[in-house]
Structure formats: structure tokens, C-alpha cells
Length: 225
Image (cartoon, rainbow, N blue to C red):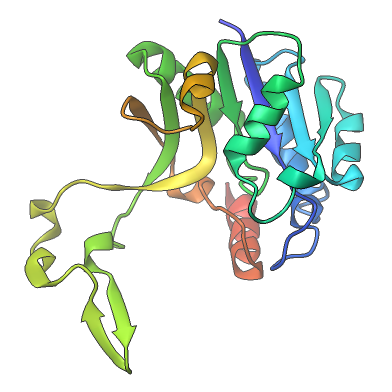
């Protein structure tokens, strides 16, 4: 099986300027994801950073196993999807691959073992796609509250206000790891389908950094891991 890794990293970020290369314990944040991919030993020299930012792409120069794809403007804005970025990569390389792994650079706590274990699940279960998920623990989604006119109401109604053991087991998606069979992706043009497997990643390695509060939490978790 031949695997390719995609690390998509836009240059613009509204909440944290230059988020993907902000310092995270002495390295650009994206470097932690690059190193997880390399240490997994699943991709050889088939690790690609896709970005519209030459500053982000320059980080790849420190790693001999990492290649760069400069994104065109039409798939670099807020409306561009990860599927668009993936198609652009696959259409601009000559080699054919069996599986594609996407690792988001704003999940620096995910490690090489998470990448390897998720791949083994994909292979063992013979699924077309896989995503990392976390357990909701006490944050059960069916108990969500919505505020309207200064008053809180249960978003899903009161029928779910029972012991959580009696409710369906559900998971929260995490951007830490995603796998898809390339042939299936080219056919469906999406990462998720009916044949989706899960990789249950520990909560402390699943932090998806979108704002400064997330960044502070991730730094605390990194110190104690």
C-alpha cells in the first residue's frame, strides 16, 4: 500500500495571525505535525504541505522528506474546501497512491502513534475512510442549550433529558487525523461517506487550535504530556 500525507495550511488566519507558524515550544506550530508524519514512517518522502503562503512553505525546507505545493488563489480563501485542496494536490503529482492521510497543522498534540494506529484501523477494517474522534464525556451534545430572547431552551427538546447511559453513544469529530482511500475520494469528492471508521483519540491530544484560548490550553497540555 502506498500512502501520501497532506498538510493543508492557509496563510491567512483571522483569530491568530499566522496561526500555522506561530511559535509552539520553539518551533512553528506546523512543524509538530510534519514531525508526527515523518516519525510515523508511513509516507517515505510523500509528505506534502499545501499552502498559499511562501513563509509557511519555507518551513518544509528544514525536512528532506517534505514537499511543497503552492496553492492558487482560487482555492486559498475562506470558501475553499479541504476537498478542493486535496483534488489540487492529486491533480498536480505524477505518482499514484492508495491512501491519503490529512493532518491539520493546528492539531500539534497529535503524535506519530496516532497516525500509525489510525492507519492500522483503516487497514484492518478495510474501510474507505476514517476520522479521529473524541468522547464527549460530560459534554453531551443532546443536552445543548440555545439562548433566545434572553432565555435558555434545550436545543433538541426535553426528550433527551434522561440518564446519559440510556442515550446513543456519539462522538465529536477531531481534525487531528483523517484517512481516505484515494480511489474513493476521486469518485466521491469527499472525505466522509457511509463506510467511515473512527479512531478514538485521547482528549488531551485532540485540541484543535482556533483562538488564543485554545493555544493556551494546548501549551499547558504539551507541558504535561
